[in-house]
Length: 552
Image (cartoon, rainbow, N blue to C red; front, side, top):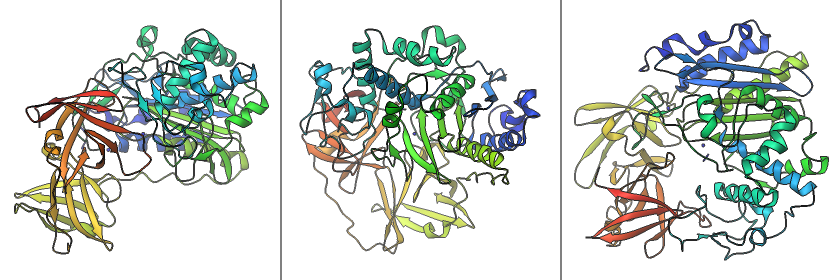
């Protein structure tokens, strides 16, 4: 928020541009160029609908909608539909904290346990302050739920506060509780009175569910939620979400988001003091999760675009994905949100919008539209071609035909889509449980992994047998939860190690506890519990429960 053939009843054939409101079709050149890009982008990215807000510091705003809120009934997205903005909510949390600071009610350098002594956290590496929570440097794990199913459970710090950036929804959930404690009202009511009302954001809410449900755009996820998906996978509508966690509970309309962005471009005027806005936008620490050059302020990314200072953030909810780009130097800003979660955020839309508006302001030629990558267009496809064989003698042939890549297994040819460097998705139901991951030695591809299966080609010269601890057999399996964010996790043994979902290593800490990922400082952990008849029945991920299911 926490961030892939045409199968959807004619949606892509119609094209998103056909659903533009008429008054936007005859808009300024910047709008027509942007709308044309959005139509191509939505078709290529499998986006059902989109809401868009453009804002200028001292000029007119624009609110536009594209595509469908309901694919089955072909109902268009309306300007008054609420979209969940996800982690962009964190900037609202930070500004509310800054207001409390301006009022002398909140000290950012004070330990959070002084304010909320009941928190289920263990700060074994050092005191956690409000500042650490605001900057994702507390050392706490990235959990979503603050309440644990185990009353004796605790979130354990993984590194000394301030040393590393580790994105942490838990920290912002705690800040929401802090706001409620100081302001003596729910966080959602506090942000309504302190930000929504002063800015005239009359449609927005910081609670998902209840009275907001009839106004929410319908949203979508891949049809099969227990495995990976290709970009143009079949979609299925999701249930409505009930959610009040400050880490990502704001819902809004494009008109309201335009007002919010104008306030940011005016230095927080009417919301926080000039000094507090400087605190909000100060780049405290590198934040590569937001972009290769991004740093993190208070609830917002701080970066540069074309030499201009910008604020940026993305938001990924269970079935919505959003992006905001605010050019503080140029005085231009854009927000976009789509009503499906397919693993990407509409960052190209907001960045291109800001670039177009800046070019128009400067009287310069319009920039070229961003390239929309085709996941089946693999420039270095020939790197991966060859025959890979497992220890049992099973063979997988990888075939490169120009820039197209596929695997051939038992005479069946399956196309591949790129999932990042040296990682691919095979477009076949039985192969979607895990990604295909190629390994290199001296720059040359020598091995291939898929879940627990491991294959090598003739160039491989390393060890071919590995010994895993006996207890790992109890942990391997498929675990499920009711969370819309983490439905399935498959644990496999490969090359003597445990892997989550086939691509994330688990490093043993002790007993059934493992660190998630390869960063030695990561506080994220999984724990295997309730071993019965040689199988763990319960998997806890940062304290949240997933139960073993005997389904492959």
